[in-house]
Length: 56
Image 1 (spheres, one colour):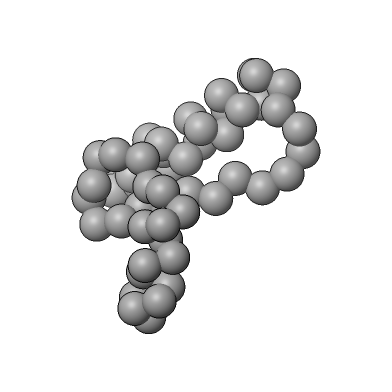
Image 2 (tube, helix red, strand yellow):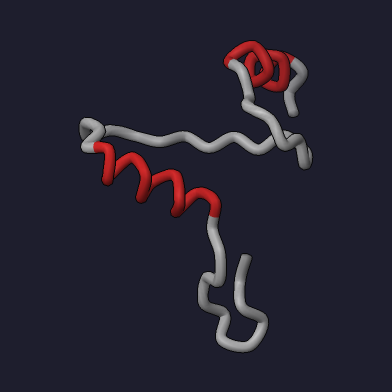
Protein backbone atom coordinates (compact mmCIF):
# COMPACT_ATOMS: atom_id res chain seq x y z
CA UNK A 1 0.00 0.00 0.00
CA UNK A 2 1.29 3.43 -0.95
CA UNK A 3 0.66 6.71 0.84
CA UNK A 4 -1.51 8.79 -1.51
CA UNK A 5 0.13 12.04 -0.36
CA UNK A 6 3.84 11.20 -0.21
CA UNK A 7 3.96 8.20 -2.53
CA UNK A 8 6.03 6.36 0.07
CA UNK A 9 5.30 2.77 1.05
CA UNK A 10 2.78 2.81 3.90
CA UNK A 11 2.39 -0.92 4.54
CA UNK A 12 3.78 -4.03 2.94
CA UNK A 13 3.07 -7.67 3.67
CA UNK A 14 6.08 -8.56 1.54
CA UNK A 15 8.38 -6.35 3.63
CA UNK A 16 7.08 -8.02 6.81
CA UNK A 17 7.94 -11.43 5.34
CA UNK A 18 11.47 -10.32 4.43
CA UNK A 19 11.99 -8.77 7.87
CA UNK A 20 10.80 -12.00 9.56
CA UNK A 21 13.21 -14.09 7.46
CA UNK A 22 16.10 -11.78 8.32
CA UNK A 23 15.29 -11.95 12.04
CA UNK A 24 15.11 -15.75 11.83
CA UNK A 25 18.61 -15.82 10.32
CA UNK A 26 17.54 -17.51 7.11
CA UNK A 27 20.17 -18.20 4.45
CA UNK A 28 20.78 -15.76 1.58
CA UNK A 29 18.46 -16.39 -1.34
CA UNK A 30 15.26 -15.30 -2.97
CA UNK A 31 11.78 -14.87 -1.56
CA UNK A 32 9.01 -15.24 -4.11
CA UNK A 33 5.60 -13.85 -3.20
CA UNK A 34 2.67 -15.06 -5.26
CA UNK A 35 -0.70 -13.43 -4.86
CA UNK A 36 -3.62 -15.12 -6.57
CA UNK A 37 -6.62 -12.81 -6.76
CA UNK A 38 -7.35 -11.83 -3.16
CA UNK A 39 -7.05 -15.34 -1.75
CA UNK A 40 -6.04 -15.04 1.90
CA UNK A 41 -4.39 -18.45 2.04
CA UNK A 42 -1.06 -20.10 1.26
CA UNK A 43 -0.35 -20.72 -2.42
CA UNK A 44 0.89 -24.19 -3.35
CA UNK A 45 3.33 -25.06 -6.13
CA UNK A 46 0.41 -26.81 -7.83
CA UNK A 47 -1.57 -23.54 -7.81
CA UNK A 48 1.30 -21.77 -9.57
CA UNK A 49 1.78 -24.61 -12.05
CA UNK A 50 -1.92 -24.46 -12.96
CA UNK A 51 -1.71 -20.71 -13.62
CA UNK A 52 1.39 -21.14 -15.76
CA UNK A 53 -0.20 -23.99 -17.69
CA UNK A 54 -3.21 -21.81 -18.45
CA UNK A 55 -1.03 -18.85 -19.48
CA UNK A 56 -2.28 -16.49 -16.80
